[in-house]
Image (cartoon, rainbow over all chains, first blue to last red):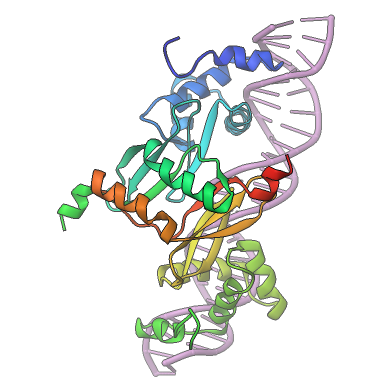
Length: 142
Length: 142
DNA sequence: TTACGTGCAAAATATTTGCAAGAAG
DNA sequence: CTTCTTGCAAATATTTTGCACGTAA
C-alpha cells in the first residue's frame, strides 16, 4: 500500500457502502493512463476487462467515487476528465497547440493564493487547476 | 462606441458573414446580466424578445460568435457560461458556499504567470480563470 | 438475510444535421 | 441575384431513472 490509493476499500466500507467488482474496475480505469482520463477512456478500459458493465453503472459509479472523494474531476479544453484523488495538490499546463499536458507543482501557486487571501479575504480551495497556453516546444517551432 | 463591444457588426461583415437580427439578439443576451451568462439564461432572454428563435439557432450562433471571437466561454462549477469578449483580461472568485462571483483583476496573477514562463518556458494564455473557494462572508459565518 | 448495487430498457435531456424557405448584402 | 442563415423536424448523443434481480457483508 505504498501507492496513493491508500485503502479505498476501507474508505468505502467505513461509510456503509459496498466494494463491488465494478467499483474496483472503474477506480482502476481512472488510475491507468498518466493522470487525466476521460469518460470514454474509462469506458474503453472497463469494457476491455468486463464487457458486461453498463454505461449507467459507469455514470453512477463515477458520481459515487467523486462523492466519496476517491476521485476528482475537472474540465480541460471542453473535456471532462477524472483523476485519482488524494495526490499532492498539483495543477496542469495544457498546450493549446500540441495538447501536451505538463504538471505544475502546487508550490508555484502559493504566492498567488496567499495574496488573494490577504487582500480579498477569499480562501481559494484549489485542488486542481488547469492553465491553458503554449508550451516551450511549440513556441520555438514558430 | 465607447463600450467594449466595439463594432461587432463590422467584425462580422469584414469576414464575409452576415449580421442578422438573431445574431444581434443573442449577442445582446450575452451582454445582459452581470458578466457570466448560461445557455439557459441566453435562451430565456432571447425568447423574451423573439419567441420564434429556434434552439438550434442559439447553439449555432453561440458557436459562431465564439469562432468570431466576439464572445468567450468558460466552465464554472459544472456550468458552461458565456461572456462578451474583448474585455480586460480578468478572472473570478467563485464561492462554493454561497455561489457569489467576485471579480479578480488580471494584475493579481501577473507574478504567477511571469514565474511559470520564466521557469518552465510555458506561456500561459489566460483569458479567464476561475478560482473556487470560500468568500470572506462565508468564512466569518462559520 | 438484508438492503445496496447492477443491468436493462426506457425516458428525459441535450446537441447536431439536412434541407427548403427566407433574407442580408 | 447570390448564397448565407434560419426554422423545422428528425437524427444523434448524452445522461438519468425505475425496477427486478444479484450479491456483498
